[in-house]
Image (cartoon, rainbow, N blue to C red; front, side, top):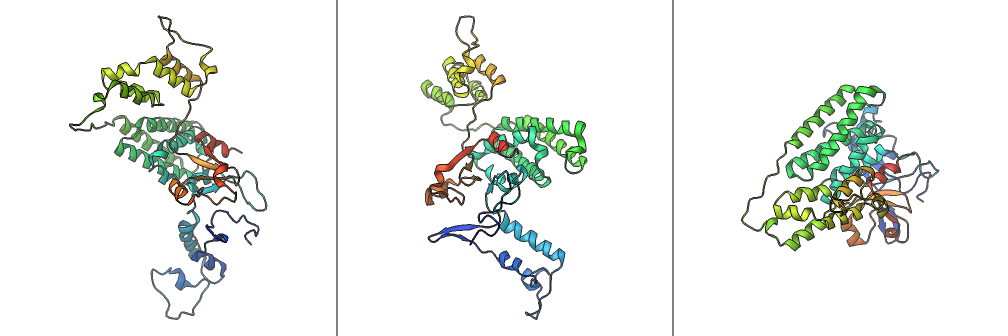
Length: 363
């Protein structure tokens, strides 16, 4: 019977779905933790040395238990890439879920290696840097900066979306300057000198990204400038970022002419903003036409833009689980990606935006 004062799907236990129902996976640590006397021969604490007498069993010391627990937790406890999001404690669910706990459990280090999730994780780190950095635990803050370092290295090597990471580092450095100078040790976890060192590292990353030169691809084949005008126009209409359109328009005069098309900027305004936002105060040119490009950047100052990501975190409304969806497993086994008890798990899934992720942990 799974319910023994703890939710049977609680983190730390792994379950597999069989023909007879859900079955809990038995790890070696489960049997060892039940015994009061742990055999030192099984723990292998003495660097491979074992006792000649196999029946010799001694009670372990506190340091030996800590060493074993740290080893087993790193192997088994954080294998699941999902987490409960519950705001109150019940008989089956103990404790509270925090932002720092979710940040450690959801495997963002692997997510940034996927181009579909890269922009999502970067945007989430930017929102945390603006307002929720002090809400992270000490371990989560360390994990935050480790993931940030991986992102910066990836951008410097692959030259992928450096503008987004520059904005992230700018917001993070501004927040750290305020916390170190005005607030200081009241909210920062750890030594202030550590945070000063982190700030210096961030400033160094900003300088490297500012000096980043995108190397041209040399070849004798066709280039973007050789495409027909209709195909160039179709490419521009598929962009959702205004700065991508402007940067592409700087390649050649033909691209610049297409990037200034008022129909293009009109569709961009309709995509990011509702008609109620821009129908009240229209901006006209000297010829009496609506300046849609200027309208877009004016609306951008006052209203949030519509966000679009290749992949996001998902939230199950049935069992309140936040998780990454594995599309390969979903196609092969028709699995939702988490141990859901609903009849159709895919019917209760909701994509979670970065802002929604932050709001889930504001109690």
